[in-house]
Amino acid sequence: MNVDLFDFDLPNERIALRPASPRDAARMLVLQGAATRDMGVRDLPAILRPGDILVFNDTRVIPAQLEGTRGAARIGATLHKREGPRRWRAFIRNAKRLRDGDTIDFGAGVTARACDRAEDGSFALEFPGNEPVELLLERAGRMPLPPYIAGKRDTDARDADDYQTMFAREAGAVAAPTAALHFTPELMAALEQAGIGHETLTLHVGAGTFLPVKATDTNAHRMHAEWGRIDAATADRLNAARASGGRVIAVGTTSLRLLESATGEDDVIRPFEGDTAIFITPGYRFRAIDGLMTNFHLPRSTLFMLVSALMGLERMQAAYAHAIAEEYRFYSYGDASLLIPDL
Image 1: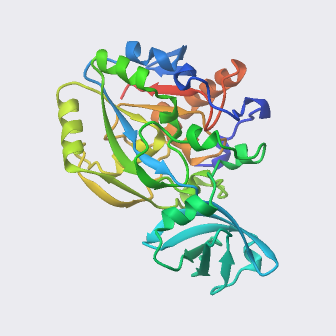
Image 2: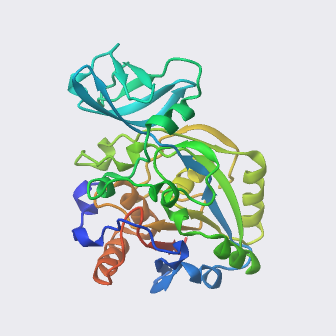
C-alpha cells in the first residue's frame, strides 16, 4: 500500500510532554464495532466483560541513551537491541565520525568499542570488563525519551518513573510499552473486581519503533527485530480464556505484535521465545487478539498502519480527526484509545 495513505496533519500542541496525573485520569477514545465514544481510562471495568483478559508487556526500560566522545568528536548512541551479554546494537548520532574499532568514552568509567557497522548506519557496541552492562548504563545512561518529546524538553528525574509502567520487571527495552502507562494499582483492583483478568508477556521494545517509514510502499519497508517471550503456562491460560468466551485485549501494540507472532493459522497461541519482526498492515487477519488498547500514533508510522489493519483505514482516519478536534493528547505520554472490532 502507498504510505501516503497513512499520513495526517497533527498540530504540535497535541503532543503530550508529560503524562496524565494520576495515570488513570487519561482520556480514552473507544471504538467498539460501529460506535465511537469519548470516555476515560477509568471506565475500562465498565466497558470490558467478565472473563476478558488484558495482556501487558512486562519489559523494563533501561537508560539506553548515551553521550560520549571519540577523540574530539561528540558521539551519541541509543541502544536498541541486545546481541550478547556485553554487546548491543545501537543507532549512532554523528556516525560519520566513527569507524569500526573506535572506542567511545561515555564518561563515568564507561567505554565501548564500535564494530560491525550495518547498512542502516547502526553499530554494535561492545562494553569491556566484567561489570554488568545494566550497571554501566545506570551510571552513564539516561532514559531514552522519544524524539518528539526529547526535542521539546530535557529528560529529567520525573521521567525515570513516568516512562516506566507498573508492570516493568524484565530489563531490556529502550522504549516503554506506553499503553500500560495508564494503569494504576487502583485501576487493576477495579478490573479484578469486575471479573477482568490479566496476563503478562515480555517484548523488549527497540528504538526502531520510532523510525519513520521512508519507503513509498509498505511492501518495501523492513521492520527491526525485537526479542520477546511468552511462556507455555501463559499461552495455555489465554487459549482457555478464549475457549470459554473471554476476549484477549492486548494492552499496547508491543503485546499485540508478540501475541500474533506466537499464534498459528489455527488461532492457537503457543509458547514463543526469540526475535519477531512482524509488520501488520491492512489485509492482515488477526489470530490472537480480540481488541487493543493503545495510545495515538505518529502519521505514516508502522503503528498507525497496525491500528488501521485492525479497525479499517477510513475508520482510523476519522477517529484520529475526531481525537485532534476534541483535543486528545497524542503519543507516548498522551491519551488512550480502545479498539474492539467486529472480528
